[in-house]
Image (tube, rainbow, N blue to C red):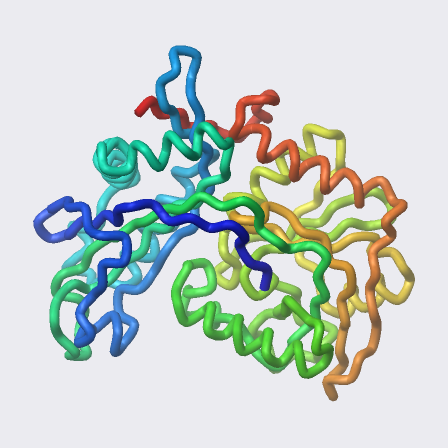
Length: 362
């Protein structure tokens, strides 16, 4: 897994209690009860990671820009709904309510204005992390009694993701499709990501990512589908110039970033196919050098290209090794698309069809 560099946290954290719709600002290191269902049983634990850019407009007023972020908020809503009972469904905030809370109550609060001004002056990247907890002091195995949304944001200099080595991990699954949890940002999914990364390091000590297959473990290994990296989605660049995106499903997190990258690539004239990739096909393409670039796509780093992927067999022995063809046009085009994606936030390039830039004056 890659990591943030130069992180600086905002001076306040927000809290929004769902039952009473009560908003408040807390200290940046505000805690939750040690005796809490969120702590003991992981009930009502879901989260989002949302990139933004803070700038000064023509009149010198602060503005914040988000790209397609209503999709992030809708995914957060789905996570909240999953963690609550059917009887509590009515207290889940709408996308518009979440937008209003984060922008008009949190980001517009005078206590954080100086921090946002510094971000705008330095042109720093921003990352807001909404997350949910049960604020009730209880450890009973029931649905949360005082569910709340908290959020805090940071600025950061870089997200170090390239170069990285990955390993296919077929003997662990990130989620089970029947439970419909793979498409949500839930804590347990990321525990499995860490377990998979630990297993990847047993194959290659320098591994920084694990590539998952689907949950159809009864099938022959070659017939199982590739799903995603341990904490991000993936794009496959083929020698004929085609980029392949895996379809969304209950096993795959619907990445807001990958949707933007695909729109940009298509605008650049790159052919993008959305289809499943069987593991047998992946191994075959690696052996034939038909896979020229494999990328990790996620919110913080946008896009990182894999420098080496180790494909293993049923006995966990290396069966094929992918290294990118850095001279192929797709290798450079992916980097160009990454730069273009960030420039959309900064309003330096035109917005491709299908993407929405949300601008808010503070």
